[in-house]
Length: 323
Ligand code: 3HC
Image (cartoon, rainbow, N blue to C red; front, side, top):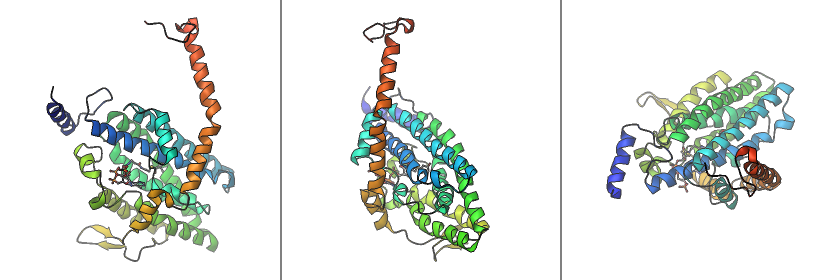
């Protein structure tokens, strides 16, 4: 069948809300966009473990420590689901990891900022995971089946992450003068980078138009960012804190909050690898990969041994007996 016909059938499936599955025909550009987005998303999850992992040994109580460990482990799990989903498109995990380490593949700008105080754990949960959920609820309905299914569970876990972050800040906001200041300071530092997570303005977004047509994305970067601002501008009232934006104001006509201009120069600087912690994050990931080499080798050797044992139907040489 000519490619134009295949393209037409493919778009009809998308328009009819039929999920695209790994063995279905798909345009190469659809495969490429999903591989790019899902693998970048996976990288964000595992790099995202680092800023919070930094506070596990310094959590203020045993209970806080247990919760933080669980949260960081959840992020590792999300990375694994997402790498698996990306692999169904034909790229090997090793290739994806190599692209992360070489700087070819991106990961979310947000994880290149430092975590300076305990209140940062609250701000990350509330703002960063809050921004992530705003984007990811949309992705539970993305057109590529394995990605959509992975996102359902991820969103449930992210909701818990956001609540635990808010609760950390709530306790601080009702504490001593120093605790209140620490809470406000963390909000001040994480607010603008959280807004940057949604990506460039729609007018600058190179992938959005095509990704909306293919229903990979169902809302634009600006729409999601606007919804996030509306949500947080209300929630912050419970904390009795302020968002660091003098232009934040309810607009009765638009039925949305107006807000100030994002520093796009800072955003692109961080995306290009020059943020406060880019080097530190990549170095930590490379070190973890090197230190984990023996685990991967042992697992591969065990799998080979198991495949070649007579009980598993394998041969001594390791090749599987044809069924
Ligand atoms: N950080 C780094 N790069 C970003 C970025 C960000 N915040 N936002 C956009 N970019 C990059 C894009 O990847 C793209 O680069 P590329 O074409 O070279 O890959 C370029 O900037 C232009 O942006 P577009 O708007 O055209 O890109 P997309 O259509 O891909 O939209 C996105 C960007 C909304 C982030 C989309 O990729 C997406 O929805 N991704 C899945 C969700 C995700 O990755 N979230 C990251 C956070 S995960 C997380 O926070 C974990 C949680 O547990 C805390």
